[in-house]
Amino acid sequence: MTDKNHSSADDAALVRAAQRGDMTAFEELVARHRDKIYARAYTMMRNEEEAIDLSQEAWVKGWQRLKQFQGESSFGTWMTRIVINLCLDALRKQKRQRTESIEEINEESGGVERQMPIVTVNPTAGLERSELRQRIDRALSQLSYEHRTVLVLHEFEEMEYKQIAKTMNCSIGTVMSRLFYARRKLAALLADLKKQDK
Amino acid sequence: MMEYNQQLKLQAYLDGELPEAEAREVANWLARDREAVALLTELRNTRQALAGFEAGFRVPESEDFYWSKIRREIERLEPVEAPVRPAIPWFKRLRGLLIPAAAAAVLAIAGLVVMQELGLRQRGTPGEAETALADAGTFTYRDFSARATLVWLTYPAENEVAGEDPIGTMD
Image (cartoon, rainbow over all chains, first blue to last red; front, side):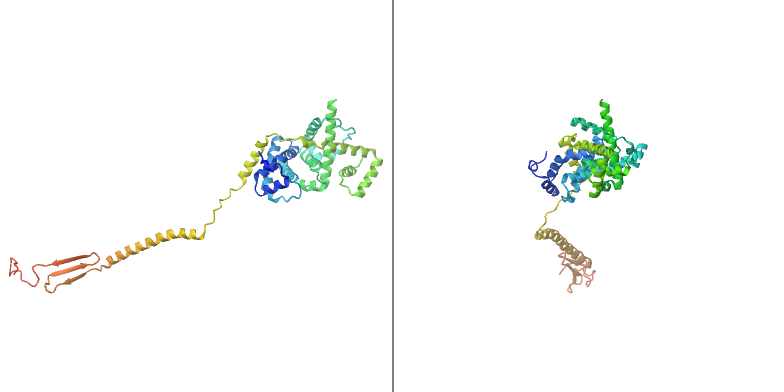
């Protein structure tokens, strides 16, 4: 359990205490942000066990690098960037271990999305929040990690194209192309799920 | 059908990535192109659907268990700091040196005494021998170091004739 004295402190005060070596302050920070860090890892990895492991690894790295944190961004954002980088490393390793499918190569070349018909009816309109989450979860699982990651960085992390390109070590053109494909594919998958309901 | 570059420009417009002048051009284009409007609507719907998606996620482990694994890993990776020794005042350090110094001095003195003793014996000083003139057959040997006096008598005396008084009576 975290120290009761820390529960009323703000993040900045907890970070300062943790930087001085106070582990109970760090424990309070973990308690506050662990769901967000785990969620980011899960969205990228699509695997509960890997998401737990990577989120915990991110916290360990966070503790080790805490002295480098100068408060340019919020502590939560700083931790999120750590977990994103860990997930990207893990996904790159996984990709090296498997061969690319023809579909993935087509996705990379950026031609498929041009031929997709436009989804004119909002496929998520009127859905309950839990149902919507479930559908998005399923649709995200069907995207390649590059498309999913671009989507995560843009939609959840609110990064600009330039930042995403730097994070993913690719060009801005590739980011735009991947983001466009990911959005169009997601719309098509959600439309398919809606059709299955009828 | 729209050019791919136009499609990407539409997306950049949605994301606020276009410079102001280009954004105005796209806005004008949207006013007269229904297909562009339909695509923009699809992209916007997808974006809205994703909003708040991560909000409901919870770590599927108890808070204590989740934290305990993090703490263990931190403790495992952190180097164990060497215990800091308290500073010892100079007089205590000096006192610490005095004990072995005194022991060495005692040993040195004892060594010197033994060496002197052995040296004296080897050189063989010693004693002195004397011969009493009155009695040339008597030798006296004195060893001062051993505090011993040895008197050596030879009878019959060398200046006497043994055969004159075979009984050796003393007058």
